[in-house]
Image 1 (tube, rainbow, N blue to C red):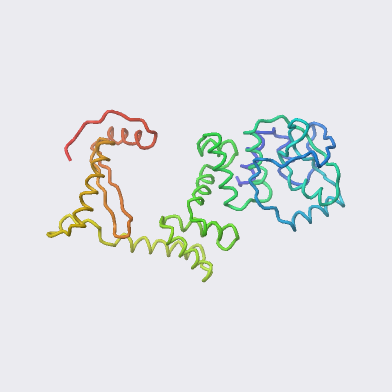
Image 2: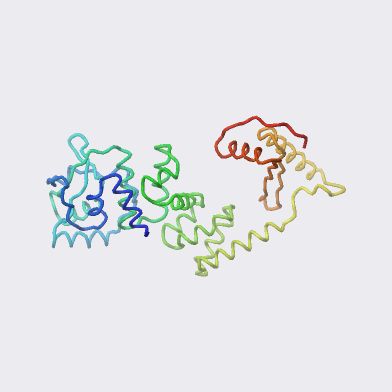
Length: 315
């Protein structure tokens, strides 16, 4: 099943199946059985406050305006009433084009929906039609999650998309602003951006992103480059070498610091914890468990924040 159909399910769940079929394809006549459209002055219609799209292509709006001059608006805008005014639920591109075409009024269908449903519809409409850039999608997802305190899985279910789609887009917000700007401007693709994420260190991410732009690297080439960089980092010596016969005062201090951190983790988790750090600053935390039951306890504690009694064991 393709993404278009998955997204359609999310829209159907919010508006009902007949409207979703019409709304998914612009322009098209409103489906039979929907409320009759009414004419509303364009000066009384405000933008959707939850609109994820930050940029509207002037050329596309101009083309749509010319189509409206010739054929009119075949599908009414969807709005909700706000006092004496209206807010767009779906159809902001059509409104902008109608204004550019010189229209004083546009056909609308008024719906009574909540802020949350309006935010969802704004995302779904843009995902179904003219794709947002990846960062606009990610920002819209993050704002929704923050506002409604829901999980990625719940958001994905309400929109009718896979949870991995939400998770992969949200990770793009972890990139440095300069790399995000390259993605926003189309200098690198979403595939390039995702390939940079395993690096973790912002300087390296910026360096490889600049190399992509300069050398025109493919996504596959970036993935290979990143894997090689990670392999080299893993081969770097540890900052703390336990078996070193005569450690320096600096190494002694590092070892004491790591030992203190390990003790903090041990007290928090109730089990032995080892911390290893590479020369580059990368490292790993090893959490020990002695049984399946202890693993389940640690899983509940780390993944769900549910503490459970632990049996104290010697290090």
